[in-house]
Length: 286
Image 1 (cartoon, rainbow, N blue to C red):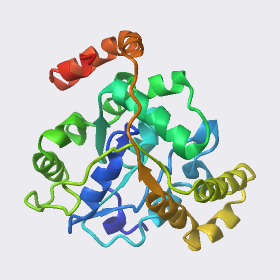
Image 2: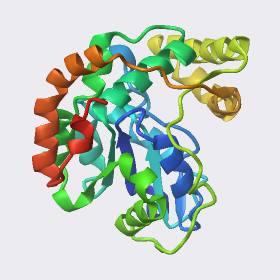
Image 3: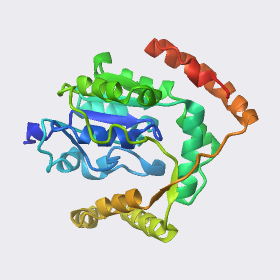
């Protein structure tokens, strides 16, 4: 039987490039919260391939949390929002899971994703993919269809700059932990654009990921489990974190912003209605 104390109770499902790294640090520093040490993406289907869940079953998910010793346990996986299959899978096994959804100005998220893929993945994300990642409403509704409204928390990256303490304490309240705790990472800058300091290290890291993906395609589950015991994935994430160099975010021409906004405005209005929040700052073209 699964130890109930090791049962995850919250997931930050995305969106990607929406301060998920900063949020993960601030949650993980709380003495009552265990956050999986990097993006788990267990239920995610990379490029239409099989997810770890399909390869290992739900017990494989539980095994990821064997080292958890805190009262509240969770993970951060930005890909879960964009993957339409994930919400129903999570609800099937964890109907009381608390879902956190982080959103950001869609134009800025679009620009950040394109920069990230160019600098860290050595490939260009298509404009269609980048735009799709900034169209939030339908993806959010996938979760509202299968989880109670009280279990879903929608947060806005813009609120971090306004008042990071109130932002993170509001999350602590949602997770039902001590809200007065102040994390060390509270005033770190979030969601900064960066690139690899040493490209050869990033190519090495990407090479590791490609090997694992090939093993998944060939259903070499036993070999993958052996590699996991070597902490290979944790090494990969450590390289990514330490091999980053902050750079200035590229400016999007005003004409391009205007073009993008024609696509984003209908979605923004739906988000406003859903959250009862005026998102005027998202609609500005400055």
